[in-house]
Each structure stands twice: as C-alpha cells, then as structure tokens.
Image 1 (cartoon, rainbow, N blue to C red):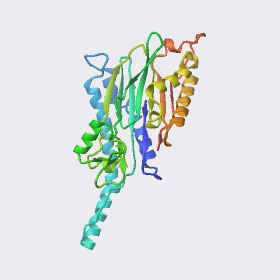
Image 2 (cartoon, rainbow, N blue to C red; image 1 turned 45 degrees about the vertical axis):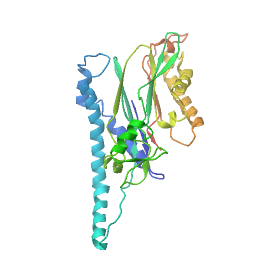
Image 3 (cartoon, rainbow, N blue to C red; image 1 turned 60 degrees about the horizontal axis):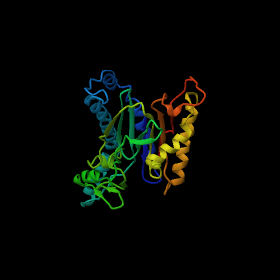
Image 4 (cartoon, rainbow, N blue to C red; image 1 turned 135 degrees about the vertical axis):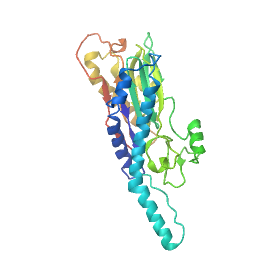
Length: 309
C-alpha cells in the first residue's frame, strides 16, 4: 500500500503528474523478481524484521526511480536551458542569471506488511500509523513514520544546510539556482532541487514486528495529519470499524475513510488535498466482532485515488 501526495507551483499540474508516475512505478515494486525473492527467502536472523538485503533493495527502488526522473529532466529542461544560457551569454558578452524551473514532485509512503513485520519506506511528509488495541480495548497509535521529512525537523535541516540549502524560519527550503521553495526535504521528482544535491530520494525505513493486537493501519497525506492527530484518527476510524464483523468490513472501511476525510476537511487551517488509505491487519481481532458472526469474503482495504495539491 502507498500514498503519493504531489506538489507543484500554483497553477501547474506537475505535482499531479509526478504522483501518478510514481504510483505507476511503485505498482511494480512487489512484482520485481529481486524483491519477491527476498520476501520469499528472507534469511533475517530476527523473524520480526526484514533482512538488510530487502532494505537495500527497497532503497535502490526509490533512488533508481529518482535517477530516471532526473535524466528525463536533464534531457528536456536542464540541458536545453543551459545551452540557451550559454548562447545568450556569448551573444551579449555578459553573464545571464538562470534559475532552473521547479516542475513538481511527490511524497512517497509505502507500507509492506508480512505475517512477521510491517515495514514502511517513506520520503516526504505523508505519514502512517498502526492502531494497536490492548486487551481492554484501549487503542494506541504506533507510528510507522517516526518523523516528517520537512525543514522543521532538526536533523533534516542540518543535512540540507550542510549541502548549502537555505531553510527559512517559515519552514521553507530554498536552493540557489532553482526556482521556488519546498516544504519537504526528501521527495521524488523536484529535479531542480535534487540535481543540485539538496533534496534526497533515499527513503527512511521503519519496521515494526506484527502483533495480534494490530487491528488496522492508516496512511495519509499531510492534508490529513495537519488537522487530525494520530489518536483522533484512530478514534474516528474506530467508530465505523468497531463491531462491523467480517461481512461488514468492506462497507465499514469505506465509511471510515470518508469520516477521516470529512474530519480533516473541517479541521484544516488552509485548503489542502486529503489522501487516506485504511487497511485491516488482523481481521480476527476482537475489535471487529459483531453480535452476528459471518464468514463472507471481503476486501480489507479502502483508499482514495492518488491526488496532488
């Protein structure tokens, strides 16, 4: 499961295009022979964690995709612009200032759940949580994304500043030689910034062992989490999912997603798109039991389509 939240300068569609391209690319993540082989024969010494090779393969999947996007940007934008700059400078015998255009980019938060662990690989500020319930029914939000890749994060700010990026007090990242600014420090796309070496496409990977107490997970764009805290998101989703029974899971998931969408829309301080994915981790959890038992087969995921701001 994954969420891709695109961003681009106002009035442009580059963010939507980058999100769609990334979604199509990541659709092949689990279809790749290398990833499948690692999943099938994970030789990790710890059954509750993936092998180091799997983490390396996933990181390469992100980074290699970014290289493809930068190669396309260089061919169609960077190289022609630099050639035109050189031509003009030779013609006027003076220096021409050039800032490379920011075409758009996207966050990427991908979650892989196996019987032993749940793995999250992410760049940007789309976040994911697991709803874990105690024996007495008390829910705890367990983050799969321990932090947001934003200039406001101390470690991320230090990294980009070391690479000569500029972080303003408003939490916006600027780069000399590129147009505009960004509120993320890791992303896919955004080739004007990546090409200078400021942004990173290397994902942060976080792994949690699976437990029977894990009822469901939520992945959301920043449009959800800006106004809805983790605990509140679980509370809202639980109102639809609790006691729905196996036969009612599909409808309950759709209802829960819509409830989160409305909650986020009402709480936003500014207009932003909201992307929400909810997936069941343990359909046998007592949380889902209804007074009338059913064995109907049902889908256990609800999501919006990929969208971009």
